[in-house]
Image (cartoon, rainbow, N blue to C red; front, side, top):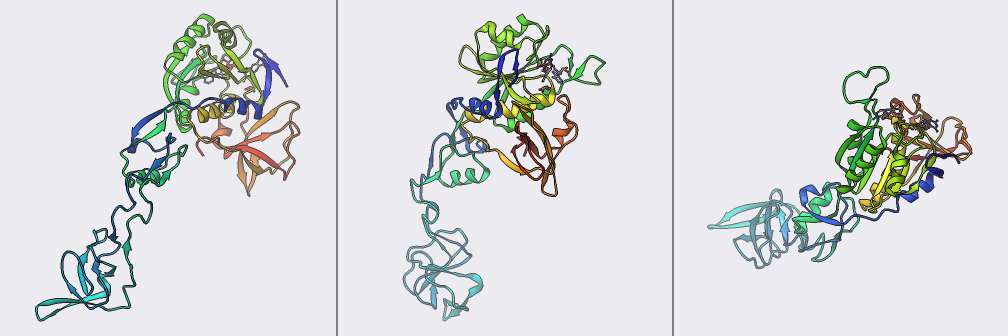
Length: 389
Ligand SMILES: Nc1nc2c(c(=O)[nH]1)N[C@H]1C(S)=C(S)[C@@H](COP(=O)(O)OP(=O)(O)OC[C@H]3O[C@@H](n4cnc5c(N)ncnc54)[C@H](O)[C@@H]3O)O[C@H]1N2
Ligand code: MOO
């Protein structure tokens, strides 16, 4: 494994495991329509039977006993029927529903009499019984569930107006790089900012919310001051750039200066090796991403994603696997992360894999993890999914 400014590199899988050790944040209550995409903090139980009353599943007549039936209103006794609509409350005494297309009504000396024109209804036919889907206090949605729109409808049917969800991890971004410009075509020596426009979106996809976004001069004192400010309102600080050892790289020195505990000084991977994970003095976590854009995204998949999953109480995303079309050489002591596309069911490495290039990732189906021993053509490689699917 390679050593670097922060110390000894941690193997790729081990780095992800260390980043997964964060403790889940406390719960908050949100209205139902804001709960999609959040993680449920406590079990949701039915506050009533589902459905909570017996109703008709069809437009037609509620009937009691054998036909023909005398049409009436109110409670039914055998031989009586009354008009019902889909979803309508069944009168007492109803034991089936006859669909409107299966019956005919005739006037018999001033009394309306209903007869079936088919072999319907069977007993209990077209009745939605109370409690068919769930009984009062049944478990409807388990704590830890990532809530989808259908869960919202289940919770609403179960009588809930709001849900307890794990607080969304709040993220402070500190972007370094005096050469970085935020608009237009950069002059030689300048570079167009990759992170400002991209990170809030990808962090949102991972369940986080960027609450502040600051630019920091490539200066040690400014970096130390910015780290102090960033901690205050956030659960996670993410820095970009400055992870190296040059005169303009200050992340490691600033972390030492404020007494942070470095948990992962760098990761045994390429690109993105200088990615780091640290615990700040107040206990919050910091992920340092390298300045090279592709390297930073590989650091994000390795460290930020598991940290956010753990803080947000989300299930850890499992690694996938794919058959590699080609032989991919490995590198002693290191994993190589390769954005790939799929051709004829097999993974093919994308072009544009330089650590400053983003086109290969933009066109990727996922990222291959090539172990030190490499992957042979036709062999299986582990994959990590992209946050955008
Ligand atoms: N002597 C060595 N030099 C380098 C090593 C090494 O081991 N020895 N490692 C290389 C690797 S690997 C990486 S990755 C980078 C890490 O660099 P830093 O994290 O210190 O980042 P910077 O030096 O600030 O910037 C690197 C690169 O990225 C560009 N950058 C920075 N911010 C942005 C941004 N917001 N948008 C787009 N591009 C950005 C910056 O202009 C540089 O080109 O170090 C290698 N060097
Ligand atoms: O992580 Mo660096 O070259 O590996 O960009």
